[in-house]
Image (cartoon, rainbow, N blue to C red):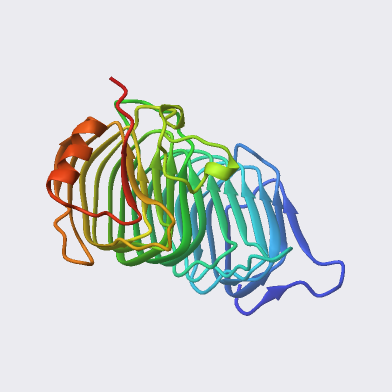
Length: 320
């Protein structure tokens, strides 16, 4: 179909059917869609632009392609799985009735998007293989993900709901080519690696950390905050300010230049053990540490080296 297919009355228009093999619109699709057969998988949903609307598909989709943009206030629930989900910019707003919400009850193999805006909510109940995005704001929630690649981040959330398994990664890798400003990564399980040009403005990377609503953006300091013995393999960035980083075990942590002053608000690292920290402060101090295990030994080393960490803290819970 060429041209536009949009709602033409105040009551709206709806496509209703048990299933559909293919829907292609070389223009704007702006109607509601209801497909009721949970055993059916649509071969292709290919459109140029998607307007605001409500979709309810009981089954899955092999190829979901939006060549242009998805408008704010688009809502979709997909009952099955999606092999390939590819769109341009996903518009949204963090205001009532203007969120764009996509919920997939199955798994998704590959997600590729342009920029995503604040207020966007993408939830995948199953596992995701890869997510590739432009400038990322909003939320992706999933069971687990192997790889995430983003251009930049501005108030973006990545959340794994997978149960802790010591032999598996809940989040394999997150790579941000540019700056990550308020990047929030949370999981119950292990995280492989996090890489960004910078991690700033209360960015938070927590694996296996619990707490009440008041503790959400507090650096853990006691054993009860560690719900699982999850690990973060590595974090690599060139510039750090106001970062919260916590897991039972932290591997190789490369923080680049760390801004130590944070208006009296604590930031830093928390763990039972840390393999290494490679960093320097914005006032020229060497902040390299290795084989951190006991808080008393760390305090002795900091004092012996004459270091002043400002608002930065390194909390070792010493579970031994």
